[in-house]
Image (cartoon, rainbow, N blue to C red; front, side, top):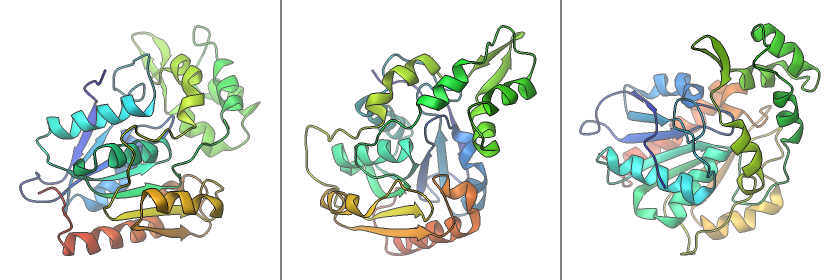
Length: 271
């Protein structure tokens, strides 16, 4: 069952400019794309939803790609769009790929950031263990939460990314993400089940890969090209999995070049 997603909106209305939809990854939120969206808002109409069980969007018991794809399809249709260009990072990239393969008419072009349409091992067990060690009833503040996470997670930036989900609400701390469902559904989130309709996506696709990331290995490319035959791959040197946060200027330049090229070609952007 699909749901109404909370979203941020930037730029001019769609009758004046093409529409872009940015999708965040696991444990992320629409705010992750704020800086990139602000750079593009003079030339595009931009929508940035919180995916289900994230940010300010509703919680649900399902967290698979068909459900998230249906959410996105409904989101596009609710905004009166025939199609949109999708930009998705990590899990958001998989949601975008799912929709492109299952309902290609809704996707005018696609940018996938540091993820491939393949099954991955579950890399998140330690993260969930660390998050579950935080007793929200006894928590004194964010600094204490960071100290607890630091016992399991050494990377400061990752801890701060996770702690964006910690919210003070009505006199108590809570997680904006639906942690129990995310943890339970991780076996499905780390996979990429192909839509039952099969087929491929014939439109333009750009895969942006972090040079220091292992999410887009060479052995994934034949399968990726079989599903997205017009795909191109660009690597951002020095970037890990969070490409747009770690190397924002090179990432923006690559993304902007793709947007300019396909906007100039009139390649089916929603207008």
